[in-house]
Image (tube, rainbow, N blue to C red; front, side):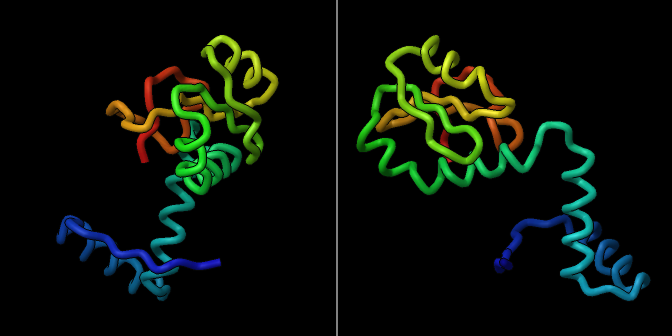
Length: 130
């Protein structure tokens, strides 16, 4: 599967260097960008396929989660919605069996939170805002 990506506010000098490097290697800009993404991901210990899958599931389910589980803490692991709990302790118990789990409190008006990486990696925060 492929998607179209539009980047804004990219440093012009870096972009020109990136494009020039792609031309020097006789590869398309698209291929160079995909390779750069691969290198960046492989060097990041914070991102895994499981985490990315959990994020995708959360994004797909977000509206329904807000509708059905507002005020509860939800757990998504292994690309599946595992459940919604009234307390964070219960949610942690549900998530603890899994290596990577997304645990977040669902609120109709989420509080702002700074998130590093694309998954919470078992971190406690008040809200996960997309």
